[in-house]
Length: 340
Ligand SMILES: *Cc1c(COP(=O)(O)O)cnc(C)c1O
Image 1: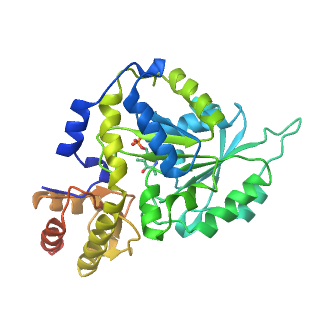
Image 2 (image 1 turned 60 degrees about the vertical axis):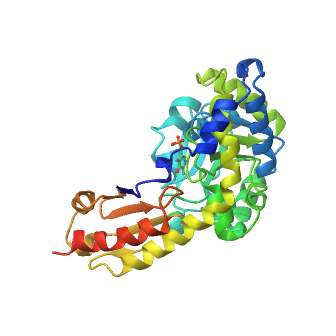
């Protein structure tokens, strides 16, 4: 089976399993797990913040960030195709009591400073006030596009001028940094907090990091407890996370594989392939005359897995557990699967 559904399907390698077995542990709710403490220091260093917090999932990291940055009733500016808006079960409303104001980030999923200016709400007797701007990089729903530094800087600046904190959903922010060929800190320095996943392209079995200033992370630690995310001898899962942070440079291989895959799929009849910037390849299938689910079923019969991504689109995602060889074997199978 060549599994191209998501980079979340990566399995921990031997080194991660050994690191897990050998990890020094303690009770992290007491702050006594040396492995988690090391991971939190390393992660903060990696993204250039004062501190970081280990969280079980990216979703929890985003939700904690929104909870900490805002007061209930405030508005959050979110991009209308963003994960935090579309795929977190309305959590901003449920966990943080926020009213969301979705902005159309266009083809690349990034709002403009003008949109922030016009959608910003100043608090008064009647109006709740804007409490947060969320950005996403890479932007998953737009096809893993890497948002340019200038675009982030401009929109973050528009928020900062209005004292609105900016949270970055950077589930794949290292993919963005690799694609843009900049240190990740060039991206993160424009925001007040960032969440990134260890469990996607970096290959850890579990976990994400929520990073920001010292005071923010202290409050985030309390919010994590509130959300039921205080963990005990969690060095067992933090140890693979530490290894995962060494895998950043390997993401380039995933990006190359995505380009090879996209080139191959561009030759498939009825496929409209979006040029990949990172490890995600979106393919419009309407011209094939098949529904996405029908295409996926035919792929599955030939041992290739992809994922549905809207009414006419499917998504392929490369990752460290698929090789160039796998990609080259997948292409003719997709061709065969979709030819009449
Ligand atoms: C995967 C993902 C998340 C959430 O991560 P989980 O660990 O699955 O909760 C958040 N944002 C984006 C853009 C993602 O791709």
